[in-house]
Amino acid sequence: MTEHRIALVTGANRGIGFETTHQLARRGWTVWLGSRNRERGDESRASLLELVPNADVRAVALDVTSDESVVAARDTVAQASGRIDILVNNAGISGRFLAPDETVPADIVPVYDVNVLGPVRVTSAFLPLLRRSDDPRLVMVSSGMGSFGITTDPERLESTMHGLAYPSSKAALNMITSQYAKSLPGIRVNAVDPGYTATDFNAHHGTQTVEQGTEAVIQACTAERQPSVFTDRHGVIPW
Ligand code: NAP
Image (cartoon, rainbow, N blue to C red; front, side, top):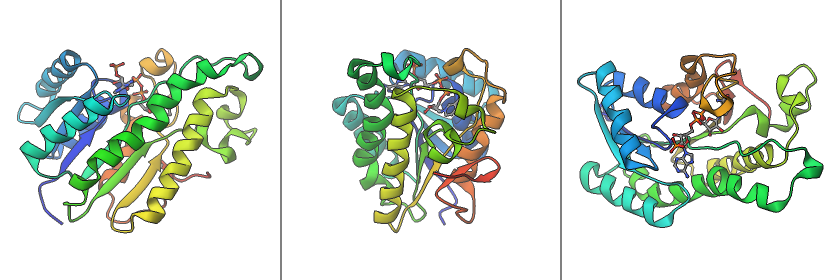
């Protein structure tokens, strides 16, 4: 495996994406910090350089809902780095958690645009760069809320939360991950559940720290052996 690793993280200007960028940069990797707003990306890069002064972190504008933005980001990365070793599809939104019987299609569309079509749009654009790696990895940041096994387990907090948009978007992402995993034999493909993590996503009500919430992502990026396709920081979890 090439010693020097190059990663791209989407939605990396805050939360789990920022912490993933931080953890990978600390390992000496080159990390492309994807941010839909370039200014926010530059600010986050500056904050990261305060934590890791010699980090090779590069901000790139990347809105996962825009073909134009994704292709421009791909061209920027291709020109400067030539390849990527790891793509972390992290950008995600929760949408409003409405009762299922109060939800209409218009509530679902924006959530699917970011959480389902976004990872497909970014993966499809960046696959040629990923294929130039000698150990390519594709990491989808999913959720226990997208797991049938977890959301129907009365012991789990996720079974108490009801909604159509976000849970079904992550369930769709899980199937997309499974299909990529079967059809891209040269690429290690993982979906990971960060667990309930204190970020802006849940107004910092999550019970884990952002470092804990990033563990499963980092494991998928760095593990010598792939444990399974769907994992959290403790190991294999049900689809
Ligand atoms: P967060 O703090 O709200 O951060 C979300 C990130 O996604 C932000 O950087 C945001 O950018 C970005 N984003 C949103 N729409 C985007 C778009 N169209 N294009 C590019 N970037 C976009 O959330 P988080 O907690 O770090 O969540 C990260 C991932 O973990 C998500 O996929 C989420 O579903 C998953 N997850 C989180 C938890 C949890 O408890 N926190 C649990 C399970 C799974 P802006 O700053 O521009 O809005």
